[in-house]
Image (cartoon, rainbow, N blue to C red; front, top):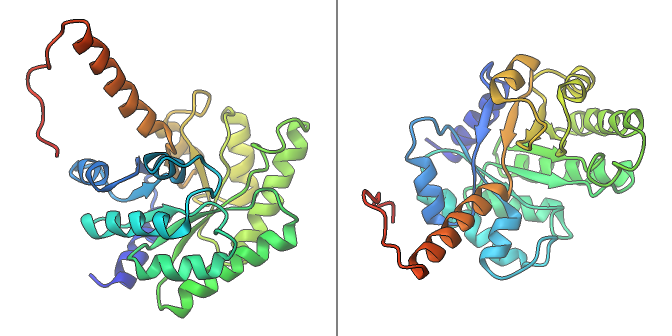
Amino acid sequence: MTLADTAAELRRLHTDPELLQVVNVWDVVSARAVAALPGTRAIATASQSIAAAFGYPDGERIPVDLMLDMAGRIARAVEVPVSADLEAGYGDPGETIRRAVGEGIVGANLEDELKPLDESVAAVAAAVAAAEAEGVPFALNARTDAFLRGRDRPRDVWVADAIERGRAYLDAGATCVFVPGDFGEDVVAELVSGIGERRVSLIGLPHIPAPARLGELGVARLSYGPYSQRVVLGALQDLASDLYAGGVLPAGLRPLN
């Protein structure tokens, strides 16, 4: 498949009747482990997890070159489409997306950081135009922080803001709208009704409905952000504690590295 074919497949997966679940990875070995599973149709990176792997805090503190290099290594190591979490675009969303396409990335998250709507729409449009100039039907997952940065506002206010922003991002060429937050089915239904079926992307958190229900509600995509890495690191810490306490390695270890 060409890069354009791979990109088109990722966009198709967002509109497929079946919910697209992507388990976030942070390096080549984690990507290969997830890609080897028969249920994996696409992979997404987690910016916070990649930054942590290099010793940087979240929030565009990692050099963009390091982030793009790792995303490219992941894309070249697996045969499924890869979407990269590229935060807010590292100061130049269009150029960052152009470089990401050059690394084999066919989709990305792009945060609005709840900046003024016109600025955020311009960033989405620049990202979409950059990918189009490279001949790639890029799957842009335009993220709004309407909940994360505005959850002190009444529910109706931040939901309306998310819907307004989401519609504007779709009009600017985004594939779907990522609304991270820990909220229940009633809010999910409002977002889907306001933004559109198979146009809303969510993150798996305790109050988010189960994947099967999200599919019924018309959600396009479910990802897990830095939490997959936290599970792995927690398991590593537990293993180390067991070994320090006199334990032994468990039997039946899978040779995944």
